[in-house]
Image (cartoon, rainbow, N blue to C red; front, top):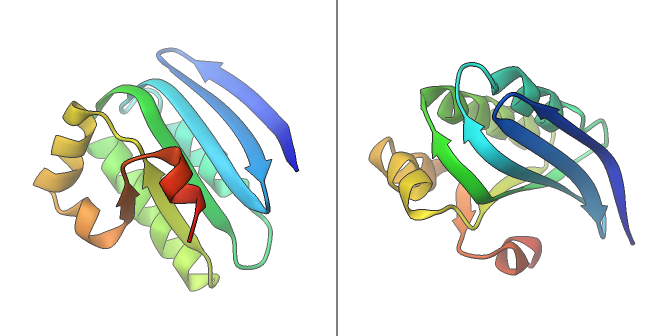
Length: 120
């Protein structure tokens, strides 16, 4: 079952959070930077289920700086400690380069497509 939980837009980042088969899907569009970090943090923090499973759809993210990296690492740590997981789906070339450069792709599961991220 899929349902939109909420949609939020601040500045250059829009967030749509849905749920699919018990997996929280956070779809982002725009830029992840210092100014939009709180919006992203709220979208990832909103998971109050035991063993949360979160997929972040990055298809429409055009830019990400270290703010996004730090938020994803913190969310990964929190979700893992709760017995769940966080996956990043469909990062574009520029975002994937940032993730690879700092080694996030070795820590957080990155999948080429949303469909791959939603499957085991």
